[in-house]
Amino acid sequence: MVRVDVQPLYDKLCPEWNLPDAAEKPATRLGVRSLVPEAVYAPGEPITFLVAMIENNQYRSGVGLKCRMIRDYHEPVEFPLVTRDTPVEVSTELERPGFVRLEVSLGELSAAAGAGVEPEKIAAVPDITGFDSFWRAHRRWLNMVQPRVLKREVIPAVLPEYGERVRCFDVQVACAGAKPVSGILSMPRGAKPKSCPAYVFFHGAGVRPAFQPLTWAARGLLAFNVNAHGLYNDLSEADYRALAEGPLKDYAKQPVYSAEDSVFRDMILRVQRALEFMKSLPEWDGRFLIVHGGSQGALQALAAAALDRDVSFVVANAPAMCDQAGELAGRMSPWPHAISQAGMERVAPFFDGAAFARRITAPVRFTVGFSDTESTPSSVYAAFNACGSCDKEILNFPDCGHAGAVFWTAEAEIMEHLGR
Image 1 (tube, one colour):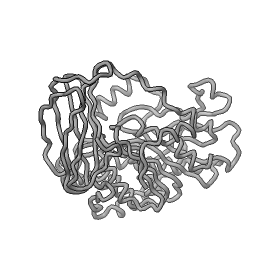
Image 2: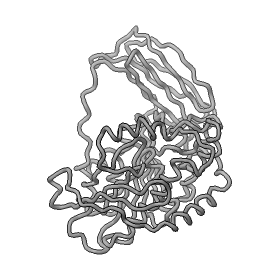
Image 3: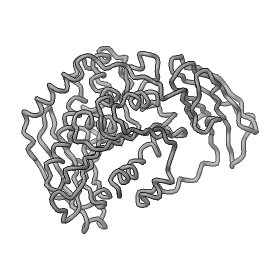
Image 4: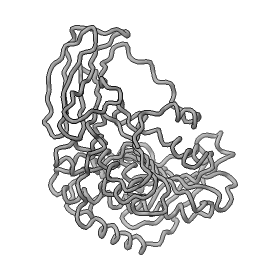
């Protein structure tokens, strides 16, 4: 099932999570949008974008813009465009399922929009040989490490208004690999045994501590926010910056020639151990085990559901690292844009979101931004189409890139899943 930008539904179901009113639009800006609002076309059909220069809510003519058209299976094309007192039409086409993105710029001003051609027919590249045996072997390795809780330190709620309703803990759990699971657990005060659904949130790219998932705990959930790199959660900003500029600099693109050497191997082992920890809590209701993340975090959520059948619901907001080998077939490259590096064509497929999606049976909700340059829409649709779940939906955001509503849709989806 495909849906398009359902913000009013989310505002109604979860008012405390409403986005603040959008900032006032700048007086001078560029505008790009698809002529067809849903931005979905047929093969060979003209794909038309409307481009404008806007000043004080008026179209400005005679301004020279730089344009770049990126199409799956084709080389990018750059060309100039002069604005008019009405939006200028820019058309192209695509002969087979895939996506197109138009970027326009003027100095520091820029804008982009995307459109899809039969996205429901984009087929992911086949799995790498040995995918399942690789993860079975690592599951056995993980089982050899006792899931000892190394740290469960009570910490105060960062927002005092939650202090009387929620308890928070800084948690570390032993794991196979170089680092333990590290995260912040929040739960309702006075929660009774077997009374709470479990919710686990995984982080996107970057180097940062876990944060307190207070709103989830206030809603009655056991909520675990998992640090992507197994780092301590109480380091200084300078310490995290030093890690990001030092040993974890460009971690996703560090050249490796074996899947055992990838940072994502240990990351996904921590994903599995984080789920084990949540299932060990006496307050878990034994029924709901929800996983969620955006970008790199969504990749982890897909891996969680593929490798642990106790997962009951998945929200994958703009998942990164999907169908990475699709770049070799001519589609736009998803983050970390590394598949063409020496050796990575043999390593990356072991950590591919489409491969994990194929193995999911739990209900899944995907989101996709049509002008996303990181979790490219072709790659997200490849994972969605490959997904093995009988209950899967994808929410299209034609006007979004790698930000915005693509990431915040989860709250209402999860509350609706829980019947709350």
